Image: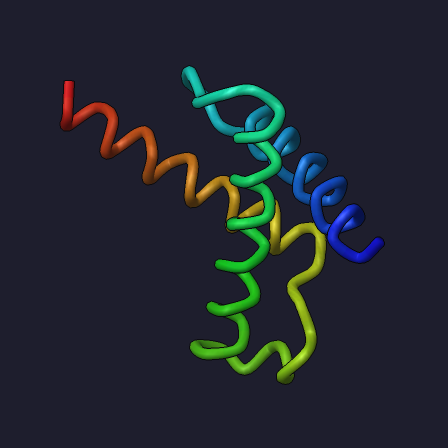
Length: 84
């Protein structure tokens, strides 16, 4: 049941990040969920390693997860623009 919630929250985070990021974004709802989950993991890692915001076992909140997903989408746009 935990992984189902991870996917659902990742999907919501990914959708919000896509709405906030200008330009054409990759994929359908599965890619959107993966971007949201990856953004949450990125935000958790940055918060733990660089800033000490989260302890071991804690994860990033919704807003930090959206910020992480937006960062990943912006990186995607930079890589896509250079490769074309």
